Image (cartoon, rainbow, N blue to C red; front, side):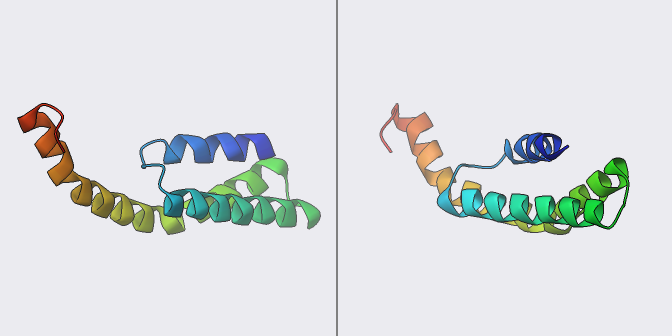
Length: 90
């Protein structure tokens, strides 16, 4: 099930740029999710319920991820526009 949590997080983060901050944030989020899963299991909760509660942590941070990604993409926009207009000169 821990592998499933990692795969879930990988799918969620595929849309974000691989910046240092995003990678660090993703790692912290993974640690929190795995800790939550393990805690729930240690208290006798079912595998499926523990998994669901671990994934619910992601919902709390989705907004911050989207805002950061939007800012990064906005900062990159002039470079993308230059590349498109001037044939690769950024």
